[in-house]
Length: 148
Image (cartoon, rainbow, N blue to C red; front, side, top):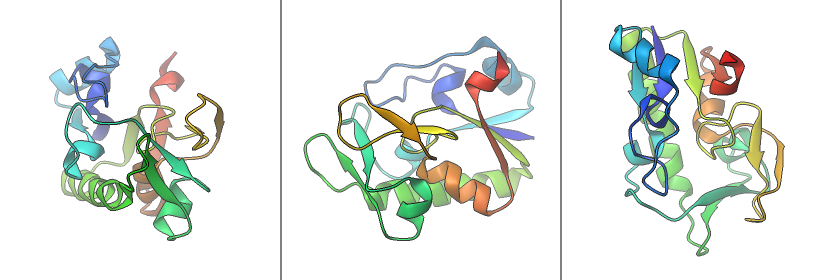
């Protein structure tokens, strides 16, 4: 069993209420091999919502309390991202998931790249908050881009 970012299976749950549908991911869900999650919605954020980026670090730093998640209006949404990560982990553990396929560059789900916190579309190496929490709990995390 896997968990997957819900936007990758076609749910319109991105910050801009669009999706990032990948047919292969949708098929995993249809076949009962994956459970879709949207950590940002699970954390209580609305859809649509302001875009957010991790400031002063990556998801591991957010987990450790040394970085924050801030939206483009300056609102601190760190607690919602942490709550969403905890809920996604709970779902993964309940389902017995050993792997997650998550949306690259997302402040929740990025597994190798995230935006740098300046809202300039600049990317840097790092993980999102949910990806970091899953990794800390022994769940293998990769991006949809690794499916190519």
